[in-house]
Image 1: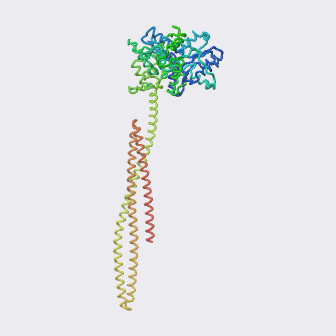
Image 2 (image 1 turned 60 degrees about the horizontal axis):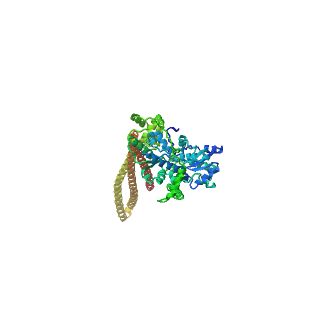
Length: 612
Ligand code: SF4
Ligand code: SF4
């Protein structure tokens, strides 16, 4: 990635937007140390944001700067007092309809490059830093030729120095802090040292949104009600854009002063600061307390500060102020914008949108993830070759989803193949189950028939039993008759006795036969019951197998449909659960068959033992 320096306003948003910390701001810290080491005479000016970035160490910082050879240290807050004086003078003398403040170089660049129609409304006075530098050059002859290092909260300051020539090294607090850490510098080891210029009063608020307005209020009561305070992206850009249109259409502005800053929390949390970990309340309280302490020192605090104190402050400021020396000249740099940025026609814009995967209004998310405030701005940047569609969050998401869809499709193909071979195996199972079912029914019918035939045996056994009983009675009577016939009936008596004994034996055997038949019937009833249970389980398994087969069939049918992924997922779940049921049922059948064969074996063993 490269930066187009003609179009970049140096706001630092791209650095903040990169959560991986892949972008860092470049400043002049290394050059400052190197030149100092090489004997270059340098003085430092320190921005008011120091109070929240080196908390309670601001005066120690001055001591350290002097310890490394910096000739003098000046407070930019006093430059801000001079700036306020310059604004008040412009407003009083020229009575402009509107003045856009310009302490923020990012916004000055924005206007110069993108809103050149607003250039005439930019404040005539330069920034507080430029005032401080010019003050040194005009009122501190001992340091007039020194190079100036600016301890700043802002990476954009370098551009300001390049444009107005007021400043040599932009040493951001962020990189200075890194340097301290790398070199083991503890500021508290250095003496607290006052600034070399007069003490600022409430202009220490300049690092905070509305600081200019509140400082100006001191000498122009009521200016606050005529001031539009606006800060932070994208609001400040939207505001300036709206103001541009409004002024262009000849409307009278609502406010006389626009106190604007690029950063939402002002310079206190500028791109070159380290205060982001400081809770906001604490940060603001530090700034406010500092302003209050300064007012107490100047005795200008309270609702009605003493006129004497105010006069003294005014005299001090006036002593370092001369008309014209702090003025700033601006350049119309919009040619660069026109050179690099061509506004696409509606058709061209449409084409870019399509290349970004935006086919309807619902694809215009305006989410800001690309760093632009709208999809249209991003499309214009792409159109001009300043960005790529791959930097659109939603475009990348779409690509990722397409990859995801491809993976799903491949997985579906694999599932379809598996389901197809599973279906074949299942169909063969269904056929086997059908056969088992038929055979089981045949077995059950056979056992039932056997049972019926057993009932027939009961009848025959009953008849035999009857005959044996009758025979026994007849033999007994014949025995009696033979006994009464004396010697003549002796042989007949022997025959009759044998017949009776034979009848007894037959009757005993019939008893045993009855027991055995009873056992056989009980065993066959058990067999019938087990067989019927088996049939039920086979039926349930068969139904599950059929539903599984149907589920597989649906999967096969749905696999050709892109939108059916979720449905397929559900069906695979259903099939898996049917498969589980079948597995359980088959297990039950197998256990049933095992029991069935155990019963069968036990019963037949018992029967055969009894027969023996
Ligand atoms: S608000 Fe301050 S820190 Fe932020 S860009 Fe402007 S001058 Fe720099
Ligand atoms: S990231 Fe994409 S969707 Fe979001 S604003 Fe930028 S271009 Fe539009």
